[in-house]
Image 1 (cartoon, rainbow, N blue to C red):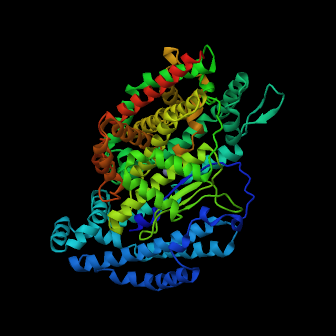
Image 2: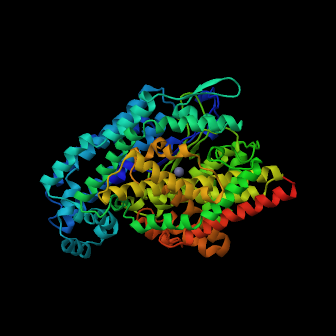
Length: 626
Ligand SMILES: [Zn+2]
């Protein structure tokens, strides 16, 4: 239950917006604002629910010791807890949306704090739920399900998610000791953040303009795409050598984190840290293995993309430091909100009448808050936490193509939430992170296909194709190369071999040279790139997470390719994800949508698409003599 509440169906995109946010909220036309009154007619109504929740939360303690008694007592406890979360989720969605309209309003922040305090309180009061459910023997659970169909229909997934962890759960005393190590489990991440952001000296370089710049992680992301080639070469060398100077310290620190992962996994009877990390979404290790194997099999397609980049940049020898230079100059395309809405009605038509009519409903019934205003939260997100009402989207519309594609992305999440909420009981409506980004990626793909098809000029078409190609290259190949590195350093620790910063440099350098075709003269990977691992904060902050960026894009792309190839049957299959919520485990839902994460097919289809994109680009380039 806690699990479900913590995610609350929020999927943010972070966008650094340079847009001047000068308008005040009351200057914006109502039609561009979401209608939060759909959730609560007034703040008083919201307060009434919150007051009720504050009284009811204590009552959830009354079920302690009763869960195993009978199918009826288990059902009553889960039903009561579930109804509580449903209302809390609704109240939280209202308060957080309201406070995001203007983060400067203290009274709205105070409302959000009230619901956050309830979430904490709920977690404390119901902490006994999961251990008690875990204590019920499997045979007894099966008997309960036979006796009480409501229990089975609503809570079989919730119960199975707890019960499947039995073999990885220790005695109470052991759990207590393991939990006590939580106090030191963040040390490596903290050390990394403090050291690399504050104490490590930042290298300085003098650019061709005579300007001397200091290379912090933030300024590096600006200067790495410098148009002057000597400048960016200089920036890269200085920046990564800056990490190389501390490779032993940073390596010992990352090594400590990898050892920590293994200590936890080993004590919980997992065969590897990878198995432990994937188990929260019940993903088999073969999903990860398949990704790395298939991406490696398709490196020639990455090399083709790199050759194309070399051709378009007009250089004889491509270096790793050339990769951030934009492939195609940005073409300005302008869209009002209404124009953007209409583009999406057309672009998403392949998803069928049900999808389009819901889209129209989301526009007409004001599910979306469009305009940037003073104090409004930046970026964009979709939230499906008001289960009985409808999802909401926060946007910061800036009249450009990025606004349209961000809206396509967030509408993917919103439709996923809408259909799942409508189809599944509340207890099964929430979907796993592993499937969440598929719906958004499907929409982005359909939008891109539509825009390419309807582009007015070759320039526009080349820009759209080029940006899409760069997205595939960086998300699929770069993220998978990180995933491979993360796996290799963990395996080394699990084999009880020592691991130092020097070892990490060697492992990383091998992977990058292989991916980018260094030995085949595709792209020169200069020596200092061996230190790049030390710049990636994800290795410290997350545990086997980055690969999901690649898998989401691969599955989303493959689903769209299947729709184009097979038509309606593949569209219908996709609704198994949209309407499936958390009614099955992630890999089963994806299989029901016609894509098997354990087979080579999704990567094959995505790579075919990538090659088609390059065919189109090369055709334009040849025709226009570039
Ligand atoms: Zn998203």
